[in-house]
Amino acid sequence: MAIAGGRLSRFSMDPPTGFKRDGYCKVTDDDKGNHSIAATMSESFLKFTNGRGNNLESAGVKPGMRWCLCASRWKEAYDAFKDGKLEKEAVPQVHLHCTDKKALDVVTYKDLKGFAAAPEATREGGRQGVTIDPAKPSQPHGEGEMSGTRPTQDQQYGTTKEMKSGGTTGAGAEQARRQTGRGG
Image (tube, rainbow, N blue to C red; front, side, top):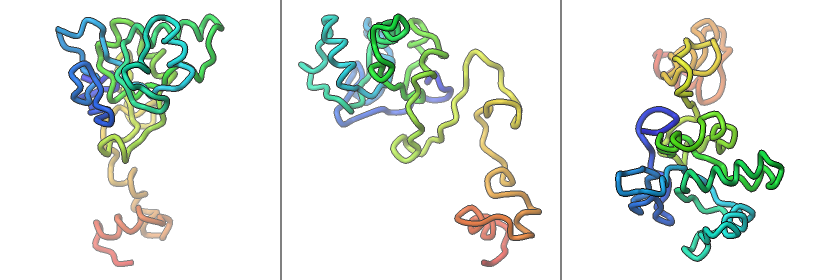
């Protein structure tokens, strides 16, 4: 289960990452290191963690790579940032939909979300950047964050009034016209 809600998404097969090297940051019973955090590596983080005895570069990890990171190693960087010993850019960006909920055994959702990578809908299997905070109950649309449900047709393509008045433009308008049977 992903901390963003729903099924855990594959993170990277180039290079193969995860405790099982299957591309998933999934924690299993035999993963004692909690390799749950899907993160993009930076040069400054690799230097920081190497200085603490975790030489990821010897395993072939390079800046810009996607890697399933031990939750405790991410927390080390986060704590160093909080203490003013590390710049914010050195804390790896987190891909919430690929991060196993077991990360919450070590760090908080709020801390991880503060370092969330920008949504990557085309690279992440078409998933949108909507996340669900497990600490908050679902909220109806229009009251804070999305609840994780799909938008209605009106929300996605414009209201019927906008379509009749020609207020919807672009690809959304074209798709709306096809669905309603109106030509272009």
